[in-house]
Amino acid sequence: AQVRQRLVEYGPNELPAGSRKSSFEVFLAQFQDFMVMVLMIAALLSMILGEWSDAVTILAIIVLNACLGFVQEYRAERSLAALNKITAPRAKCRRGTFAVEVPAAEVVPGDILLLTAGDRIPADARLVKSWDLACDESALTGESVPVEKEVGEVEASVPLAERRNLVFAGTLVTRGRAEAVVVATGLNTETGQIARLLRREKGELTPLQRRLDQLGRVLVAGCVAICLVVMALGIWRGGSLLELLMAAISLAVAAIPEGLPAVVTLALAVGVQRMVRRRAIVRKLPAVETLGCASVICVDKTGTLTENRMTLREVRSEDKELALTIGALCNDATLKRSGLEVGGLWRRRGSERVRWSATGDPTEVALVTAAAAAGLVRGFLEQLHPRLAEVPFSSERKLMSTVHTWGPGVRIMGKGAPDVVLDRCRSIHNGRRVLPLTAAEKAFWLAQNEEMAGQSMRVLAVAYRDLSSFPGSVDPSLENDLTFVGLIGLNDPPRPGVREAIARCRRAGIKTVMITGDHKTTAVAIA
Image (cartoon, rainbow, N blue to C red):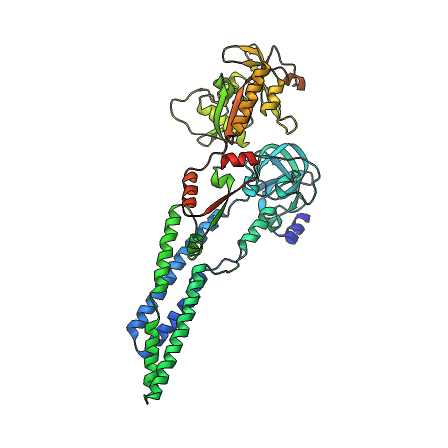
């Protein structure tokens, strides 16, 4: 009963489609242009004069112009409607003492969400319990790296991207699990606020529309002036008033450029089709001309300039296979092949080319898929080296460790921030044997880390430690005295054609601005 009451009070947890115009209304809107109205008056006057051929020609041009505009706007609206599907279809929550799964639209403020890795969050919520939770908020804030969340309090003035105690509708849980109380649904969420802004139609005219409107008014004023002059001269010379009126109207109709709206519409339609081939959606035909007047383009980095997909770029190690093996085993991502999870794959290398994918933290996804592409399939590796224990990654430790059987003993594998991992290492694996890690070698690898970071890479260090037996639990002291293996560099690669597109903009005199929440050094390296 309480849920139903709140559902009535706050409304369904969904973004309203808004007042969509019917097809007939969209078609009628094509006749609201001032120049088109002038042509309609001209067609009416031609009928009065008995010039039916002129009237039919003008009306045909008006209808053709309206049809072109209608078809473009109707297609654009259908495409946008297909894109408006980012909300979670169902949500897991606790109501009373029961854990239930309900449609996302029925989530109400006060519900306790039960979040696990892979869930798309249905509403804005405040964390009440959290176990190593991280969320991908790139769709909302543009942040390409998952944001770690924690229970606590933050100031109301804190920017959206830094509100670590909140999770937001439409974002994705990449790691951990949590319980969170819903604080906002529907249009009251942060995503809803963006949708509310996008729904506002200011109705501003484009530069071309303003010029055509001005031309239409000048033509009307000119035609009226010509009619008055012709009639005045005719009356002064003693002509018939009716004949003079008909002559003046004929002259006014002849002065109106009937083909101008159709020519403009055809030119804009050609521009729209070119943009469609480049996967751009244009809702209003005149907007094409406005784009042609742009002098500055502000572009979001994540997902626009880049692919929003972390990719392994470089492995710096004397034993790359061991480095990738650690990256695949010290990992919580779920590996997939052809849409199926790979848990017990018995073959190490496939005879055919396989396209791998995974779900989870973007960095771990990049590691496990790159290792699989190199023949180090996680399912096979875990059959040889089952996992015995795990210490999850945390922002304080900046390190993740897992324990696996390895030969007669066990091996602790770790990955994390290079400076943290190197501080815990006492030896280095040079590809053939293990040697003591000297201060000079440590400085060398720290310099390598700086160099890779300067190339817009996110850098991880991998290391291991062998033990004769598993002590039963992972004590923090076991993560010391590690053997350093190498560095793995990952990045969110630029989209194909971005460099050429920016170069064309500069040649056209257009200034490009990249908008990102990344660190300045990373942003400069990407730019």
